[in-house]
Amino acid sequence: MLDRRGKCHGVALCSPHSEIQLRLLDRRDTVPDASWWRERIAACATRREGIDATAWRLVHGEGDALPSLIVDRYDRWLVVQLLSAGLETQRHLVLDALADVCRPDGILLRNDVPVRRREKLDEEVALARGSVPETVEVREGAIRYLAAPWTGQKTGAFLDQRPNRILAGQLARPGGTALDCFTYHGSFALHLAARAGRVTALDSSAEALDRGRQNARLNKFDNLDWVEGDVFEILRAWEREKRRFDTIVVDPPAFAKNRSSVPQAVKGYREVNLRAMRLLAAGGRLLTASCSFHVSRDLFLAMLRDAAADSGRQLVLTDTLGQGVDHPEIVTIPETGYLKGAVLTAVD
Image 1 (cartoon, rainbow, N blue to C red):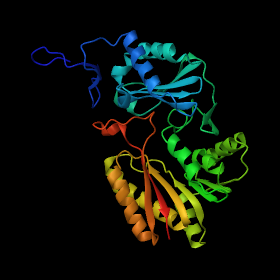
Image 2: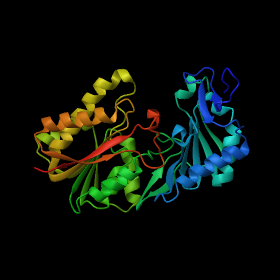
Image 3: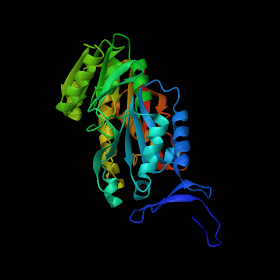
Image 4: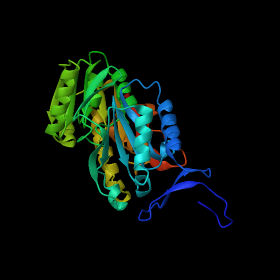
């Protein structure tokens, strides 16, 4: 990129059909060749050293100064997303660098995302290198679960909540009761089950609950109850029954897909958190989160204040949560930070 005087301001990926036509790669006057890509990806790998898991995000797009590139590691395999036309021109260099740095058994392209349509790119799920199994057993702290690189949500699992799932397990009352709302494959529920006496895992998808049961068997847990149904309706029914849980997790899918849906999304977040607050036992803890980028942290916390005010409970904000270190957030690029959460304790 040159200014009117011919001075170089950096090197960028160009996507002529995109809303974002230029994505900065380097502020130096350089060429992103094979060695450049190897150095950048090796630096990403170094920043992830010490993560207590076998599955994590290796490259988080702009958060790692590699815009529109997502790379997730599942044990010995990599799953990659190329999310811009500019990056697509670098496909072979990126894949070669990943192979050189990570030495994976296989690399899968999960380019089945709508954003590629806006870049005039085809959507695809394709094997790029080696072989990648349908399911991969991964470890997260002491918990194991099955990821599905070819067919699962995102690139096979939700990796951004890893530290918060481990925290939930630490928050669970030993021998107590726990509830995981929107459990999906049971990721939070499994961590809760390692400490709680009994865990209820709630989701509307029978298929997701079946995978959760598999994960429970993998960890030799027999203290989970898998409940299929509408979370909102079930929580209201349990409130009428005056059920109580020592630990509750509320981690719903993104309610706000765009700016126009934010008001309705906030109502949904407020409703489900209000019901969860009323189901907390005295001294119980609620870990709640939102992955909706369009719902800001301030708006999320304001929603929790409103829900707490209407709950009739006295609740203390004991922690605020975000993304793991493998999902770095750049302060000046809000798009890199979308996950926010909180831990509330009922003191009444």
